[in-house]
Image (cartoon, rainbow, N blue to C red):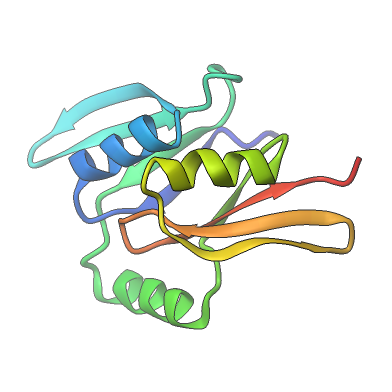
Length: 130
């Protein structure tokens, strides 16, 4: 068994696609029209055959909206992405206009920072201990 798909809730798939590709650097892998929405995924350019992130158009479902609002209010990231160097990634993203809710910090040997993905989700980037 392996992880192949992970979803993140978004309200506007096109805006999410723009953020996740132009700011974060992911690449679009799948875009299958399904009426008013698409089956839309992005992947890391470092692992194009690896896990896909589904830009799931379900942000307006009451349960998902409540979850996202609660996580955001409490400052809890919805998911996390691994990076080689949190400090340099923080600078790169900040220079692209990404708003961080937590500046780089360290705990238990891990370095991390948290940003707002403009889709109602907080996302953590982290660097594993050397």
